[in-house]
Image (cartoon, rainbow, N blue to C red):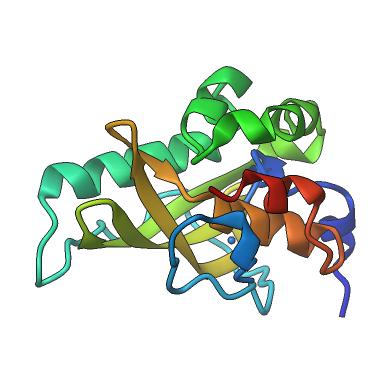
Length: 183
């Protein structure tokens, strides 16, 4: 089933902004659990872009790491975040620079964002993220699985999560940048 808004390149206010979540194995250099492709879209109304506070896992994860992951994830998908900042918030972001810059001009990108509902730190350098992609504050993709990675001292959106959104947008075909970004 195709969704017309997927074809319109809405997903990029970095793949939501060029936005948002198909484990594309070649898109990440490390195993990334919970990165199955978004299965459904929903038009259920939402009062705002905020949701339940993220939580650390029972086995670890400081509240500071959880807060940084949530903040950086939402900033990456915010239409107010400049492309250069988005690039810095994506694992291997420089490989995706042209995609992010191109999507920043999308008309739908200006109303797209993400809301993080939970974060579970699973290792010192990786966390599971559950988020929703919003269009004008209304969930378009709910409870999507994603991965955050610690790269160069900063928690970033995992490129595998970004590639999953790019793949969804491209009718199931991963762009070449996803295979070249691995590593």
